Image 1: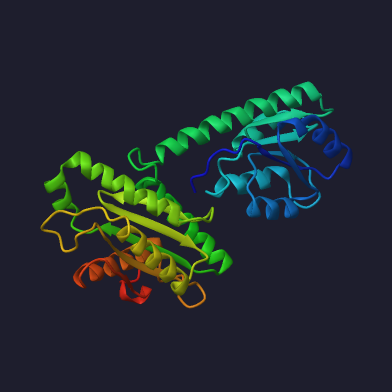
Image 2 (image 1 turned 135 degrees about the horizontal axis):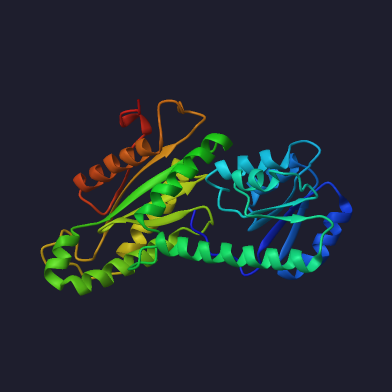
Length: 316
């Protein structure tokens, strides 16, 4: 998911030695918010709830080996980019190779030197911030400032997997500006770009929760990813969006169906509790929403239509 790098980084210390935790907290509290976990199980729960910007991980935890935790986090698309710094007194031959083989960014040797700890943490936070900013630029549509198609494709996979794990509904909606070619042909492409920006602004303001995503899907087509949103919740949000766009009163081309610019919307909801996860994947949800969008167009435009997931051919 696209997210701006916080000005107050979140640092998670995972160590069962309270003296180490206290020393690290004292050294690092100027860098941002400090959280700590005493074992791997607690750490994984905290990371899942709120992914930190950096993890300081003890090599020898009481329940799971630090190398195994690091490898698990690096295999998860939602946590793979988090820099992990090992804390260890292990300097045996081959140790460095093991650390970097599992994807760790660095390691700090015990006994801890506050100046070394500060320098390493500062360096990796700065590097992580730079990477996130570059990633945000790569996943942002330059014209509308919404997420782009690349970001959408990536996020819908992440949210689908999260919906499966948490057993919560996931709604995907496709939104298309009605008869946009007529608008462009009549007013010109510069005016068309301004129209796109106006619609995009409304879309961006319509999704208020951090997990929601509004994206430019391509051309004059946009998309929503709405986690934790069932069909009824999506209908209320999308109907309000439909009316908000209409109330912009953007004058349409003379030959258009409506005097003001409007949008058509199609959406579908994946509910793991009611649908077989074996038969469906993110592409099926998008295909079903696309069918619904087509039906909105066929039904006169400036409307929304819902299609149940079963209307699209299940994946094989």
